[in-house]
Length: 103
Image 1 (cartoon, one colour):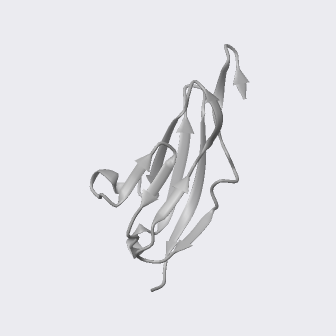
Image 2 (image 1 turned 90 degrees about the vertical axis):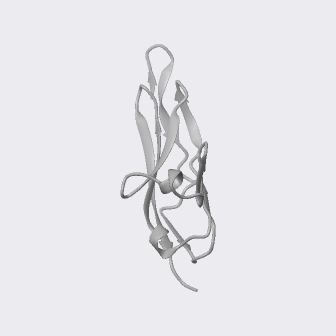
């Protein structure tokens, strides 16, 4: 949606992120949450169902731009994850469930 002055709310691409991912312990999660637009440039953040990613306390979690990577998955990494793009005009978000099972 374009607002007066050339600003626009963020828009995330729908097709890039599935709603459910199933991986095994030890696998690597690598997902992207690409933008389709937004002016001014949106800020992308990732979070977990419990609020925050443990990226500051765990070297297994890494966020680079719109990409989330979690290495050496464990059963307790499973749950809901949210990618949000926001700017002064608005916000768009996508949620997916990570299921870690098997092996």
